[in-house]
Image 1 (cartoon, helix red, strand yellow):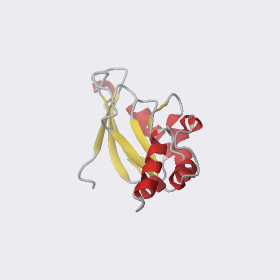
Image 2 (cartoon, rainbow, N blue to C red; image 1 turned 180 degrees about the vertical axis):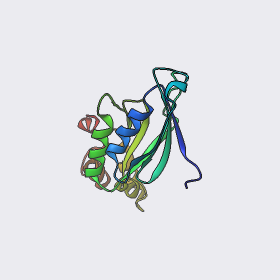
Image 3 (cartoon, helix red, strand yellow; image 1 turned 60 degrees about the vertical axis):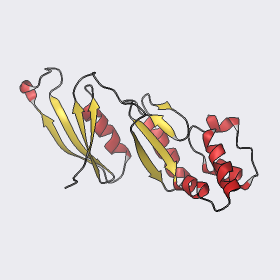
Image 4 (cartoon, rainbow, N blue to C red; image 1 turned 90 degrees about the vertical axis):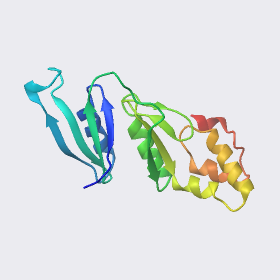
Length: 168
């Protein structure tokens, strides 16, 4: 059993969110749903907690009311092998009302922040040539969804890092 698990506070959508997340990531599943039925503090929300796994990592979602909401101070980082994975996770997590942010960050429809990051970004930012690394980082700062070809062109000095279309 995993010793430390992330606990996510939802108003009333814990089970809905868990089912949404497990539909997106491979090797994911609902592990347990704790349904208090008529003993629930809120008669409209009988499900209290949902334990679920995303890519083998366990989380607990709690229905506890609107007192607290998510902020960018906590985000889930998705390591993407390539642009295809970035595009997939970006599109799926935005479904149903998510909001794009900057530099590979987004908020899903439940307000949870995610970082969708291609491995190539880290490779470019650790390039032994500091000028290449700087150009890649500057290009990343102009983007919402991270675009690997734009990063590579910027690192190579063959494209302007401030491309306006990278923000779209």
